[in-house]
Length: 193
Image (cartoon, rainbow, N blue to C red):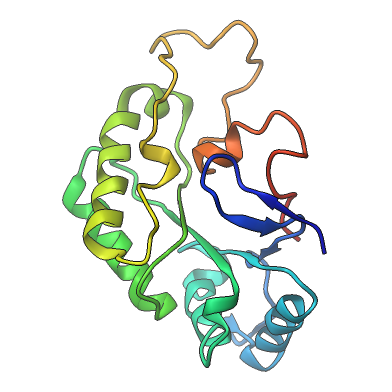
């Protein structure tokens, strides 16, 4: 497996990640008998970037990932999830969502915490508040985080009414700053599978 530094985070991630949006399902829940071995086999094969989110797999993906990472597997991965909160200015709700993800994942820290489903308009208007909320979540709840998350670092200044001339579509703001600023495949991990 090839590993790369993820943007400016200092995290070494596998070039191939494991995305947990479409895990095997049974009776409306993630089938743990199939999903857990899949995730663990990927880790055994060298994958160390695991990505999930609140809504994935009918709201069961984070719990399934938490189950798969129990028993010493958590220490082997860079864990990524997303805050789906729609009102990025509501810091209390942002914090609550973060704490709920920690509980569902059964972990004491999250390595990569992404904005999920943020539109271009929300990106322009609310990114500073959301970044502040994200930084507070990490500083108060993540003693193992080596420093502030990449999202709290300097953001480019974008006008709120127009897109940059070079942008034909909004950036994928649902990814971390380090991921969305990749200029080529050599500066960060590849996609998730």
